[in-house]
Image 1 (cartoon, rainbow, N blue to C red):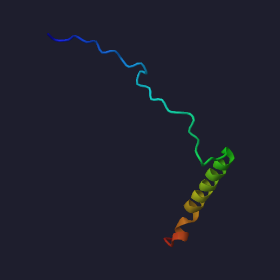
Image 2: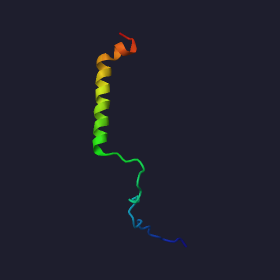
Image 3: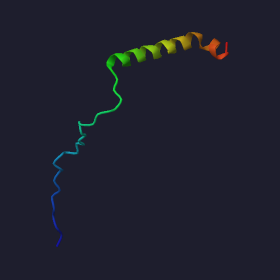
Length: 58
């Protein structure tokens, strides 16, 4: 005789739980991140304008 079982969804509905207690050893202030982004943008602009002469291609 076959068993007719009804499969019910799990109680957590497939949601993965991550623990909030984890603290990273490396911490950045928002101001430092903004300054780093501005520096990268300036370097990118300089390389676009003067990159060929820096690399000896022009």
